[in-house]
Image (cartoon, rainbow, N blue to C red):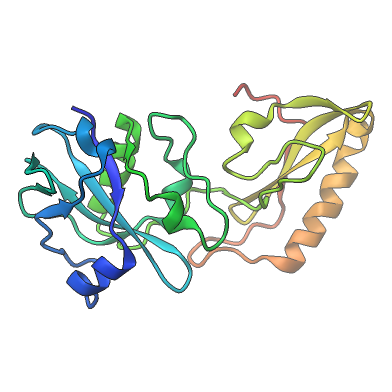
Amino acid sequence: MPDMLAIVSKAVFDKDAGKAKLGQVVPFAGYASASKHLQKLDAHSRLLLVTVRPPKESLWLVAVLEGLVFDGQRWSARVNTTRLTDISAIKDQLRFDSGKGIVAKPGALGMSLQTPRVLTADDVKLLLDAAATGKTRIAAPRPVNLAKHEDRSPLPCLCKRCLPRAGMRIEAQGTTFVRAKVELHSRVLWFWLPASLTDDLPAVTSAVTARLQQKIAPFPGDAPADEADASAVDDDEE
């Protein structure tokens, strides 16, 4: 009885709930799809519906359908009681049973979710907890990773999605690199440092911190910090 995630197209959402606002409950009571991927569902499963909203590809949790019954064309269910919730900030924490998470190029988030996916127990808890907080927009976990995704770098990407797989020490182009970070104002910037420069890390982090202080400010409601926290080398176990 797996729980699954499926997408409501923009056209369908606009037709059935186009005026709905975050925090409201859309009384969906079914999902029209004969996708073979949904055949894993049964009466004990939950089908979590999401949709992608313009203009910034926000990902909204639309409904949680339970008591599912399939008639060959449509999955009927009890009327949804879950509020519309913007889950954009936590979408990269979803892993699905494939372990691959959401991988989408800019402008292609909706397309990347066309195939229904089996959710892990952790995925379901993450989504239901988000919907239960009373906040319609879920804040990104702190500290926020500032690294942007890199496809063409010779070194492993250190964005929030790739970081768990990046390792802490690598060999590239005949040089050993170690992973280090600077934290400031509830943000963290990870970077690779040649191992030969480990002794110079305090000077490096001081320079990086000075640049960050010119570009970022504390989040609203956060007390400003006088100094950044800089790690020497990231020795935590993954």
